[in-house]
Image (cartoon, rainbow, N blue to C red):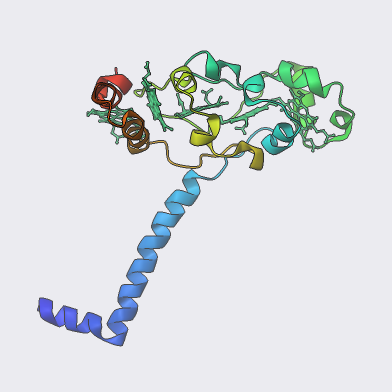
Amino acid sequence: MIKRIFDWLKQPLGLIAVGIAFLALFSVAAYGLYTTQQAPAQPIQFPHQTHVAFGIQCLYCHPNAAKGPTAGIPAQAKCWACHQQIAKTQTSVLLAPLKDAVLSGTPIEWVPVAIVPDFVQFNHRAHIAAGKNCEECHGDMSKVTIAQNPQVMNMGWCLDCHVKNAGEDHVKLVKLTDCGTCHY
Ligand code: HEC
Ligand code: HEC
Ligand code: HEC
Ligand code: HEC
Ligand code: HEC
């Protein structure tokens, strides 16, 4: 019976069936990757690339990345400090929601992009102190509009880099791969 199936799979029609099965699997996987890397709909089409090109530092808008666990998203007052002086703010369709938010005093509800579950302890400060730069984990933000993840931020991703960074240092390896380092 099994042999007959294999024989059939070797026939032209069988090969086409195998091909279709592979394509189906591949597109499911590709779609999964595509959806995780899609930027979500945001209240403002905030262009990272424009701001980074003007020489505004990541830490100017996300200062807590160097100081604590979360990097933080700038409040609209920080946007407005610049934008109320920029002529384009009065006419730009893209900036209308910012103007509305400031005038009405309602905070902008940004949709999180880079996020790990609550039971995972991630701390920016430790990573910045160890010399990691934003780009290694968030990709090149000088090329994107709305932020998107360059990779899935799962346990394998964290451990991969931790193992690489520990190198021959056994004590460090134990610490950086210990369950209690990231889950407590
Ligand atoms: C002018 C302010 C500004 C600058 C400069 C800036 N950002 Fe942002 N950043 C934002 C805003 C606003 C958002 C929320 C909108 C979004 O998700 O795209 C954001 C979102 C992000 C996110 C996703 C956060 C989430 O919600 O999960 C990452 C990661 C990020 N920025 C990294 C960077 C890096 C790296 C740089 C420097 C190369 C940078 N940003 C420069 C304002 C800024
Ligand atoms: C340090 C100054 C500065 C800060 C802070 C800043 N921006 Fe900007 N932003 C600019 C400049 C400069 C431009 C380009 C204006 C131009 O093209 O004339 C710009 C452009 C934009 C545009 C594109 C407008 C268009 O029509 O092309 C949007 C949207 C925007 N900013 C939103 C924001 C938001 C939201 C924040 C706060 C999270 C923010 N900006 C913070 C300086 C700033
Ligand atoms: C070692 C990897 C790594 C590096 C380096 C890193 N980040 Fe992150 N970033 C993450 C992870 C993981 C999350 C999700 C954290 C969470 O959900 O608690 C995140 C979340 C964020 C967020 C959104 C949530 C928050 O923390 O407010 C912003 C904004 C951000 N990072 C900006 C930056 C900036 C700016 C830098 C550089 C100064 C940077 N990150 C460096 C891994 C990194
Ligand atoms: C790009 C590489 C890289 C990635 C990705 C990464 N880490 Fe790290 N992580 C490091 C380095 C380097 C250190 C500091 C090691 C040392 O002590 O010198 C560190 C340290 C830590 C520490 C210890 C902080 C302390 O108090 O000493 C924790 C907790 C941690 N990482 C959690 C995570 C989690 C959770 C993720 C995934 C969401 C992650 N890391 C992804 C490189 C990375
Ligand atoms: C360097 C950080 C880090 C270390 C060390 C670590 N984890 Fe995780 N763990 C994560 C992250 C990040 C996730 C979230 C995965 C996701 O969102 O897919 C996670 C998820 C999990 C989950 C949830 C199941 C899942 O797939 O979502 C379990 C259970 C778990 N870890 C157990 C462990 C155990 C047991 C150890 C020790 C052998 C350990 N972890 C060590 C970062 C870590």
